[in-house]
Image (cartoon, rainbow, N blue to C red):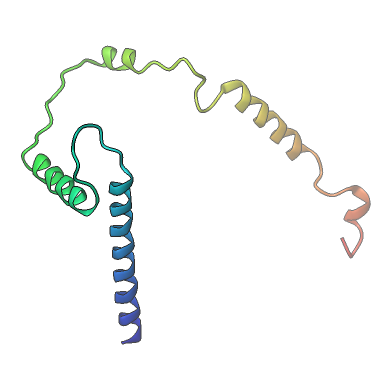
Length: 112
């Protein structure tokens, strides 16, 4: 029973904190335009407007071929994995594997 009460208390606390975060975010938002409504009213209005907008919204389909898709997403910056850097790392790892892990003098000792 105590575990259930603890769970419910933490659930309520997290929901209140999430609501507070949304409220603070809506208050801190600077609106462009002549809209004077701020705070909780603005948050509720925007929240309801977002729900209404997405109910019947169906995304438009976009027909494109693979060549156009890849041409539009060309990156000039180096990729996440650079082949030369990866080769260097693998060569260093290979060199470490070939070396003994313990110095020869420590292998025969009992306390090593």
